[in-house]
Length: 377
Length: 183
Picture 1 (cartoon, rainbow over the protein chains, first blue to last red):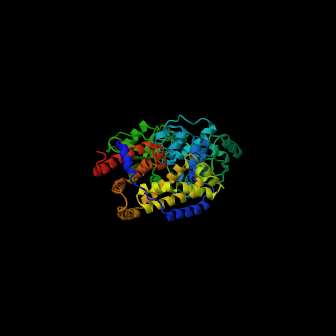
Picture 2 (tube, each protein chain N blue to C red):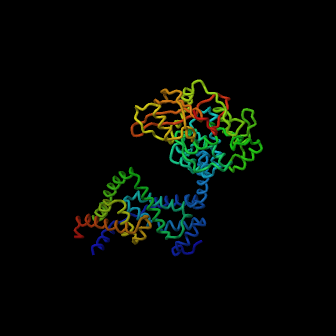
Picture 3 (cartoon, rainbow over the protein chains, first blue to last red):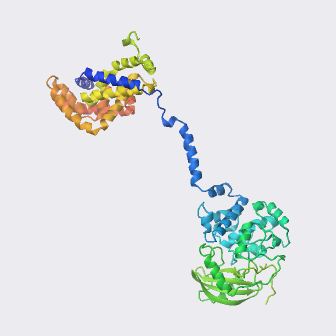
């Protein structure tokens, strides 16, 4: 057979006998190696379970070191309104500590670019898919405390186009409860004067995280407030609420140039890039429309004053302003009070963008709550 | 003392060596050195290299005898070590050139005393790849079956069969063209 022939041919390859010297040398070295043999066979590292635990511990430690605590906490308590409130409060503290210069997103958002939206989802409101302005955020913060206290305002709020807050929550709440300020003295929440003790209990009853919030005083008025960060903001940005409460309107001390002051304020907030965001009711008028015409149409289609239907108004001043891009600012005197409306034509398809803002007031002057409308002119 | 060292089974010698008996290991060395040396020679076709590989095999076996589990025969375990030593040897490319030179000199010195067929077989084996040559050495010279060869070389049985098929074709062509034995 061919295979047998091949096998026989291969066996012609004779292997030379190993030399005795080489064999002796090999035996000598092998015996030396035998004396130095491994006492215990090395267990492969993958069979040693200790490395699994070491690796797991190292991974957890690395995870804890590299990742900030914030996202972990948000992941854990994302649906918890108490946690949300705490988050908001800390955010405000950080903001104040950095002199309002830091970006809100950077301060709060280790989780990504949509922290506000995530928290909006927690709130379960219609603001879910829109960007949120600063004022909305602040007002919503107030709402979380208020809604739990009086139990009347929570969800189902309708958006109020043109309101300063630019969103559902802020508009409705600010018109009914908050007025223009982010500060929410307990005394004016339900229209009744509250003692500090009562406020403290309220903040505890609220079920949020206000339990630990100090019952602080503002402007030496002994007015308890719901949460310290809110009162801090009020102290820096807005005057405190009227102690008389019950929605009584007090005279406002307007600044000399309300439009100019508003522009300055918005310009200083331009870093946030959020003041222009939010819902708005587009007014479909041509670019050549006069501000009076736009305001008239806006008043027909929306509520110009914090969710209240303005029945009469007059234009005090109207002038172009520059806020990155050109706008038209209109100072109105309505039957509820003064408002500044910013207008901007954003193309024929969109029409006119508009948003109503509070009129800046001098520090220390009381805040008017628009519960009692003025008599119509 | 071991009364009749020729008839002591490998397992008993290994067991004694595992307990540190150097004499038992020496007996194992005596029993398998020639076999390993032949295997190394048929794989590398160089006597000096074969001696080095055989020596390296037993040094490794002595150092790692405690890792011998008894799942395979001691002989196959030694072949496995020799195979690894051969792989290391093949990796040394510098030695490859030296091997060629040594082979030429060796053939020249042996041609006088060996029959002509030796050189033809030597030359034919030398033209095989190292893997094919080693497989041929284990199958045709060490009389291992394909499964044992696969265990020694650390590959699948089908791989061994395929190598043998290729090696046979190549050797038949090389040896047949010279001698006409396979035509």
